[in-house]
Amino acid sequence: MDTLTDAERADALAADLAVEQQPALAEPSTRTRTSLSAAAATARSPARRITLSRTEPEEVQDKDEAMVEENGDEEEELQQQETLLSEEAIAAQEEMAELAKDNPRLQQMNIALEKFLGLVDVATEQDKFLAAIPHVPSNDLQRLSRTLVGQLKSFVLTQHVQLVQGFEIDARLAELSEMVEEANARIAKGLQPDSEELKDAWRPHLTAAQVVLARQIPEQRDEIERLEAQLRELEEDNIQQEIQLKAVKADREAQVSKTRSALSNLDKTVKAMDFDEAMEKRIRETMDALLIEVGPRG
Image (cartoon, rainbow, N blue to C red; front, side, top):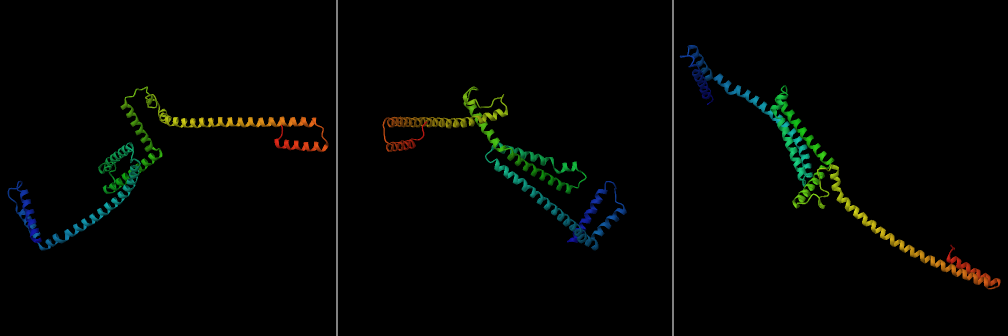
């Protein structure tokens, strides 16, 4: 079957050559016929047949297998490298997705970042790399471009997460969404610019610091009212304590006054009476005991 195939192939080749030479030559020359016959005979030769069927396909097959093996190793290496870079990018994306779970504005920021990374892919296509670095081989350039783009994406995503967490962008965007919802609600109510509910709303002449303070004023008012209520309670308690202290002081002064009066009367009575020394001694002892019990004068 291989002999017929090689022979038919040689005949077809000879026929094609003859057809191509017909417009230029009306009749083939003896040299042309001899060449065609030699080509056909060579194709039918067993030695040539062995060469065609064994030697050349084995060499080609070995080269193809070597190229496939080399390309397979390169593709496997690139896939491993790309997988490693993709894991870093996916880790950052998962963290951002967790932060933006209930934050639509942060989700929009993540979508914008993904679009930017898509533009990076477009800007680093293979043909553009070849045009920028023509002296680098194609295979090496492909590996270089994938490594560069993967590391760039990982760096951008990692820094993006750090910036969001460092400046609390997720919380600030949530506050912005809340302010927008409140503004939309005021617009829906049709409130007038001088109404009470619009006192803390944003106006064109306000600065960013004033807007932040305007947001903090209601909370500060509540805190001030709570502190003022505590102060009023303390003042009322102090007034009650002062009243009680005044009453105790008045009672004490009344008792002291009565005691002084009693001691003065007793002293006068003792002086008016003429007692012997023993009686006078007992009276003095009684007075000293009363003085000790009442306390010092003054």
